[in-house]
Length: 291
Ligand SMILES: NC(=O)c1ccc[n+]([C@@H]2O[C@H](COP(=O)([O-])OP(=O)(O)OC[C@H]3O[C@@H](n4cnc5c(N)ncnc54)[C@H](OP(=O)(O)O)[C@@H]3O)[C@@H](O)[C@H]2O)c1
Image (cartoon, rainbow, N blue to C red; front, side, top):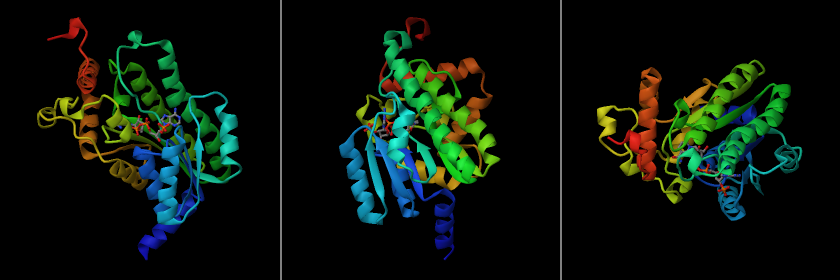
């Protein structure tokens, strides 16, 4: 009975529609399944129509809710206009901006400027546009929720993924400011800090979690390769934490690492994060930093 009451109030607070930008796989798919279980209808956005439709089909069959899918590139032009078309007047009470992982790594100047600009469109312009449009409506209505999926990289500069880390810090800090601004109008905003997570995108990329050591320097964590979290657990923690504060760091190990990073000297944080990133992607350190 309590569970039923809880689910009704979640749907009343954050429904009737949830829009998940990057909702076809990984953490986005986990969010979609868990929101469907709570009775919300879903608008799912991603680039590949097939993967989107597979997730939508599974959810319709299991939960009998409405799911609409939209194959869109969030880095393309006129995102605000395309957003209006795909929302089509539906009442979106929850926005989850999940798309935004980096695929591959390297020194910024070894890659074309366009790579960096595309990443900032995905992780800065994209969330800003969706939050401005949909968050404005939630503010007028006086209820709703927004989750921006950030990363442990957002806690410090990271060599080999410098632009990615900076763009994830943008999402984390934006979420904190809007938690305050929109919180005054009954809208819950959360920056979700995910650590290594076993998503299909990460599996497809060159990342090798087992060879990367934790950036914390904590001996117990440092000796072993990074253990990626299950996307379902990341989404579950975020939804349970929604309305409880501006930042949710998923996973006990990540919370311990984040606490250490906040108190360590900046040079040390940057060095450790950069070394972890090099291990993760199998990259050589620049000669000056080789031991
Ligand atoms: N996996 C990790 O280890 C990890 C660690 C820390 C933080 N995170 C964060 O967790 C989030 C999810 O990461 P992920 O590993 O699942 O990979 P991802 O590449 O961000 O993919 C997640 C979803 O976003 C969609 N997507 C990606 N680029 C898009 C674009 N340009 N336009 C529209 N949709 C797009 C993907 O479908 P399509 O490819 O079909 O478009 C997929 O549905 C990201 O924000 C990432 O920064 C992940």
